[in-house]
Amino acid sequence: MVADLPSDGGGPGARRGRAEALYTSVVALLTPIAASDRDVLSQLLSEYLRELAALVNGDWDPDAYPFLDAQWTEVGRHPLFIRASEEIVGLALVRDPMSTGSGLNQMADFYVKPAQRGTGLAARAARAIFKRFPGRWELQVHDLNKRGIEFWLRCIEEVSTVPPKTRLLDFQGELKHHYLFDVA
Image 1 (cartoon, rainbow, N blue to C red):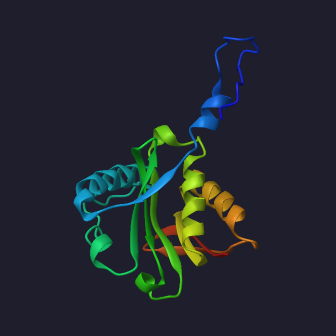
Image 2 (tube, helix red, strand yellow):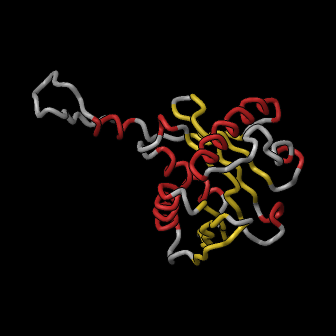
């Protein structure tokens, strides 16, 4: 159901505003990524890593993601496409305890294309992933990714009954926020 929320206060036939667009665009569908879609995943990873490298002044090669093939060869890895209206708009690379070896689920990588940000789609996808893989979780966000930090803290607050355990890690000279939390 779509609410009729005209942005200009007009009557029937008035142009519908952003409120409706937000309401209708937040449906997120998660689908497993098959090995046959390796090239599509590789392209999305390159977009994500280029954006991240620009944000953090990174000097790594965005086309050299070291864990690409492990998505289909390592037990406990769950590569997922995030879709909106059947269009692939993002990715989530999840590792369960069989992959991490630590008893934790891990959000290894998560990306939603810029055009879909601010619609609620990323948050819905994250919540669906957390519900699909209940238990103890960890994730890390680069210190310079302020929007990412805000996003993940909001998502964690929605799915965990207690605040996350947080710490700041120095990984090869780069600061990362590490979050540890439980999802029922």
